[in-house]
Image (cartoon, rainbow, N blue to C red; front, side, top):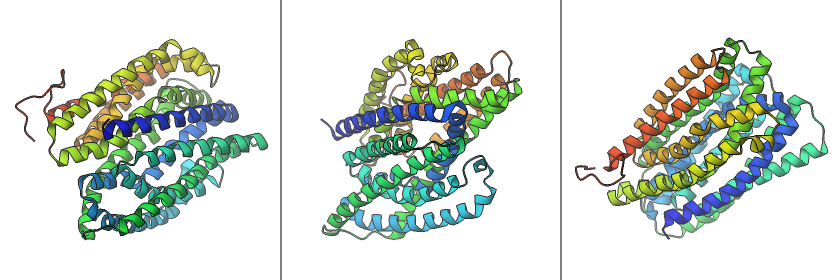
Length: 443
């Protein structure tokens, strides 16, 4: 069994267990926060994840790519430079966040301690990113898998413990729910740093060669900046999306309360169910980036073509049966959260959106591994422009409303998948329809 397959299976099994825990966690959140509280909680999360993303500077990807492409004798000096770079960027970002804090109006609806919890996340995520990148690049997927599962398990434990012991008002409940998220990140930070320290001490005892900090920084930044730009754009669109959807619904004549509740049903119920299997796609992403990077660095076209066939075939294999289950069992699935026929309908018409994202996630990892970062960024921009335009125009119509919003979401997913897929096929020289080699291709 290849390293790619073993690493993927390990991450998939651990992620499945983690997703089971998160599924229960979202049920607890729905019951404890109610529709209005859940809508507020889900509305602020994209903004929080944007801040977390900036803090990570996409170091897991750039470090894993660097390690996969280069001999182990360079790893120790590369890691030292990465640590210095992280100290500087984290300190700068924390100062910037402190200066901007009084102007971040999106936090005004939430508990005063909420923004300080976000502040605490910045160094936790930044330094955890180095360790994740190192373990990914070395194909030590067991440590990544355990960390991912542990984070969700600890969060659920804290969530159940605190809500069973105490009664909170809505604002405090949202803050407590986020506190459990930060608490779980602290536990993972301590675990990853401990494991990284052990590995780093082993590296010190092995032969190493000097590589200049300037070269390392250039290599890391050349990957981190474009990949961060892609993720920032993605996070910004997700941060804007709740407000865009609400604005469209308000324009169609829906009240502000109903608009918030309907968004809560999509984000807190339909998305929680629909993206449940996405842990498989994310597991493939983690393994694909170093694997594709190494194969492309060695100009192993056959390996790249074989990997694409495996990824596409496997995604079809699990994706189609899963979305059919979602469609035919939508009502009992949504009833696990809230008894809402509206949420059931949302889940059913979002089926294309979920299925196509199971393909988009590993395809984007493939583009990163091939160095096609500019293409990935442009694809995201074009699909989002078209998607958001349709979401607002159709969502503002009295006879469509949320159905119109979902049509826009589905259209964006179709465009993004096709653009990613066709670009990869062209780059590695395979037919769009058969995924077989085209003799005319050259690197």
